Image (cartoon, rainbow, N blue to C red; front, side, top):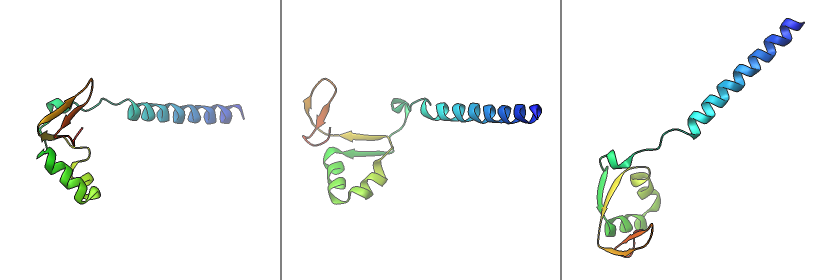
Length: 89
């Protein structure tokens, strides 16, 4: 009976350690370094705004989680925000 209890505890500990390892590996993985990535799309601020105004889901599929290069006239600069053409932040 003692051997069975020891086996169950050992299995539960192994499952717990494996779960913790996978969980922390997922949560604390290295972030992307977008400065080293090539832009998947190059678009103007006007074009990006037009794409999102036309069909948001299609634009999300096209641009979301991708590195994009956006060009335009800088209209506002604050501590951590740059606005292009008064539309793209």
